[in-house]
Image 1 (cartoon, rainbow, N blue to C red):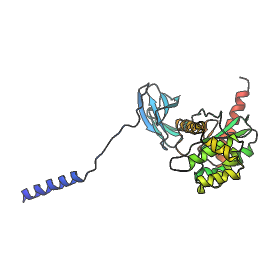
Image 2: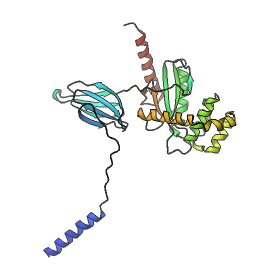
Image 3: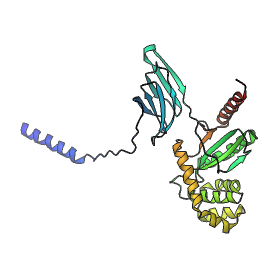
Image 4: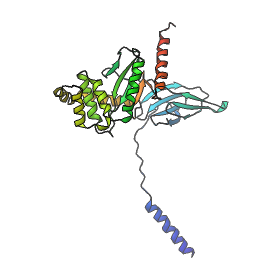
Length: 283
């Protein structure tokens, strides 16, 4: 009987081994730190990595390994826990204390050749990384335009392309919109594309271009210009470096907008206007 049980046990072990999957571990990115890390943790949305170093610095990296910024921590902080996309729980074990902190990084967004809506000299820039087939982007358009109207002369809207690979017509739509910019009709094309975001295909996009009043011969020529494809790629590279992973992602003077509501816009814009006003005051 004991021999039979032993035989059955060995058979089950062999069967379990035969059914086990093959695991594979591939290194995707290697981060090389200049300072010794004491703790590393991702933000809750997975967009960045927080690194606490031995000299009490909190460094913020993209998942690609680009250092976005750093800030000095209280030396009493010995642990941290990400609570949200921009919040950390900072623990001071020796003092039996903890605090919640907001982490903000002001990104440098290149707007030199991007389409602009509003007063180009406005002190506050709303930079939107968008995809013309994205339903969430389409839903955000009326609110963003409302904000530009409310803050007329104080805010300008800048469009940055971030066509997602899952949207087969987004790249063609982005090329068409940039070609329309050369004819002075970017925002007309922008509005038509978003009004029809769920119906887009090459034929529909061309119909919308005709509705916008574009010169079709010039449109076809410009869409084939490699400079426009390069601009889209540059926008996407800049967005990725800034932590953009989905659309719409909105920055206000380089600060990520976490709350895409009217109140969320107001809070961040008013904060920026107040900051700029303080900077004007003599020291």
